Amino acid sequence: MGASTTRAEQADKTAAEPQTDDRGTGGRKADGAEPAGESDRGRAARRPRAARRPTILFEIVLVLVFYAVYSSIRNAVPEQRLQALDNADRVWHAEHLLGIAVEDSVNRAADGVTWLILTMNYYYATLHFVVTVLVLVWLYCSHPGRYAATRLVVFATTAIALLGYYLFPLAPPRLMRGDQFVDTVQVHQTWGSMASGNLADMSNQYAAMPSMHIGWSVWCGITVAALAKPLWARVLGALYPLLTLTVIVCTANHFWLDAVGGVLCLGFGFALSFGWYGRIAYRLPKLAATPARA
Image (cartoon, rainbow, N blue to C red; front, side, top):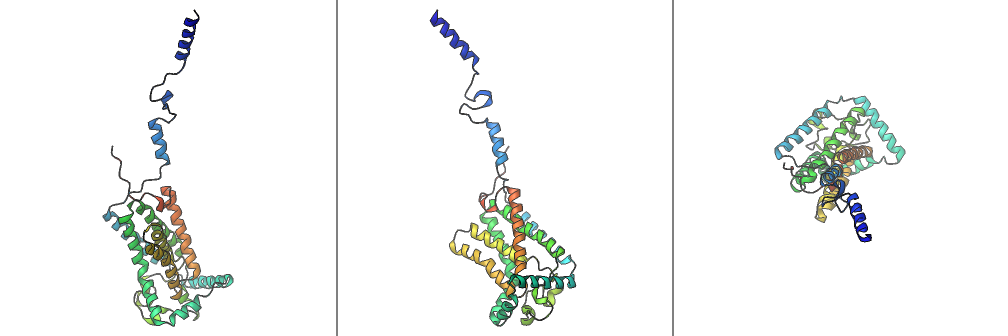
């Protein structure tokens, strides 16, 4: 009687317990993990947006169209000469208050060394575009998974700069009232400046704030320093924006504060890219994601 009663109680207790199989009770695995479907959905929700490399033809067209639109809008901003000159006086005065108004001395010192200022003139006119394009091409070929997110930083930085050109027209130092600064391209008749000489009519001369020479060069420098493997490449990446800053000041094309504006625009570009992809561009997978098959 006692034994049979005990067996009956055990049978009743076993029947009362929920039955489990190898997939777990109530849809949960026996080891406590979430069901496969629910777990996959949860991981997908937490996973950063996949970065896929666009086709080369699409990318070439996109970059060309973007630059054409940017140039058109930049040059369509009214050249408010008097306001731009007044703003230049305000910036110059602000730099005096900050104790950093030394651009005139730097400009005249560099102009006194002919070979140096000629080199800087050509640097200003060419490397701004050449280096940026080369870094984009390198990213596309060597870091396809990071390319789209990193390119978005450049596009967003450049787009937000247009607001600065519209809201705060600014004459570069070389066009300020008085004779504190030397327009080195005009004086030395060097080729390539879209803001001096015969090419001046093709470009808005009062779009100095923010400096996209700095915005783009800092982007190039950070990208190369963060992703390149050779030490010499990382060092060059770190030096490039510093050299660019020196050039824009020596040639009297920008104030120090224009450079600050360029860095702030770049910060906006990085923030937008981070918000879209859920991760800083350089921490995305190196290889591009492949479309999932059905």
